[in-house]
Image (cartoon, rainbow, N blue to C red; front, side, top):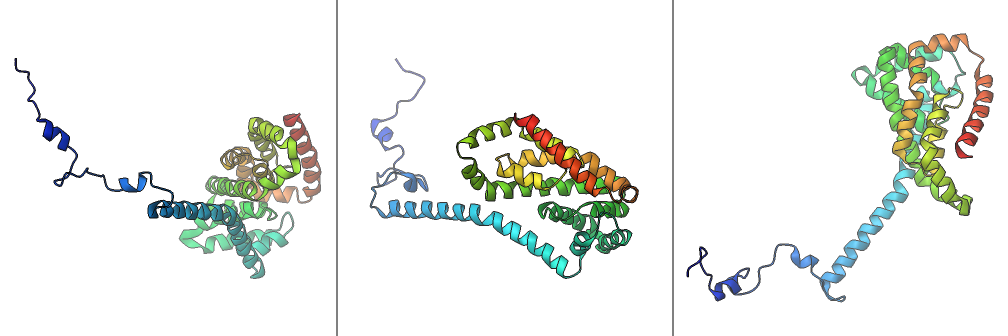
Length: 277
């Protein structure tokens, strides 16, 4: 009885997957993944490649955050020492019409690169937290209009908060873990559950909307992405208020800094206690 399949000679079946010389065929690169004796050249090569890869990864995790922060600080310092925008912002009180005009002219002087230059300035203002933002945001409003400046400012704050939280996590989380000791895991669990809302509420209130919050949240273990999203949602009302009516608000409340600071401290304490009790 014949079947529908043609019989294959035993010799041919045994030769399937072999070269013309009868040696087994080996896929390209398969020799690297095949187990080798510990002292073989290939095993030593693999060990060296793995060690180099681990060393480069460790170096990146150590040096990249510090390099980014040093570069941001260097750019800010160069601007300050050269009499640039950083000096105007750092040396100006809460409100100054001449400072607003200076920053506005700087933004306009960038020409077609003005939007990108403004966003980079906002990122630096966030990462180098002591730089005040009201005059920069108000100048953006006069240069791009309230809505356009609001969108650009939010983009800069989102990136800046992401970078700040990453820096805080990379450079400060190990220190915080050592300081908290056995309490670290409990704090981290509470922060994972409520940290997003803590950042959101702190950034929502103008009295506590400080860029230092991003560094602190990152150091306590909150993911940079969550910090960036909570920051963007929280500061959106304040950002659009500053870009739409920044000059008018600052002129109407020129001496409100002390009151805002005192109220902000009280609000921050209440929020933290409420979320972590």
